[in-house]
Length: 350
Image (tube, rainbow, N blue to C red; front, side):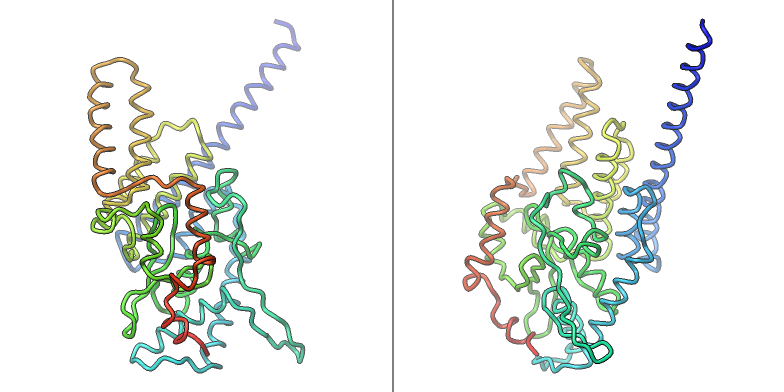
């Protein structure tokens, strides 16, 4: 073997070794995030939706998330929310007014242009907007991230409700996430209205009929908590476990599926009818079954896989095409008077 070939082989080996090391370091970040989310499910004293969200995003971003900047932005938004609470009159008279005022202030921070006076100069605070670019994160998972939302001021039905929940928790009140087909929104419960919907993509309070109007919400899906259920904090962590699994799948497309199954199993322990987790779990089982080729084990796996898909259908899940999702989302603006909760619109005004 010539000296040149030896050097070339050493170079290639070195590159392969370095690549393997980098992958191992990247994977450890995902396991670290998994462990954090697990700890929040085991001990509620460890719970922090903000920390959970940023740990998931940081794993995908190779530990390069600028948490100092993000926490600074959240602190600013928190201060702005508090100033709104202190400086305005909310037309709401029930005994949970303090809580409703906090929800309303966060909503205003996210959707209203607000005049801010700094050193005798008046500025207009610009709220967050909807980003129609890659709303499902097909091109890059970063388009679903809260960190991207805080950096660009543009987000979608994934990052906007996540940020709303984070900001509410910073004020000391809870906010419940809820699911519709391909969609995340917020459900809140007040004395005056009971449970009501808060839609962060368009900035209004739609009635349940809007969600039903999509045509993809089966009554069984509502009955079984697949859609329109106010998720508790543990169920919200379940959503993040599947975000983590999806990010891992995007980062390592040739993975063996084991980490993804760990995430799915833990998410389903907390939220058994979480359709996205059930579907992802079934897809991994299908991948593993195909790897078995034609064997007795593969036949057993096929029977189990068929049962999984039957169960997903039986709990009421129906696939909603992406173009139908966009059309449904637009109806909130084109048919606003039909689907808007006018009582809430009035009670949340200054």
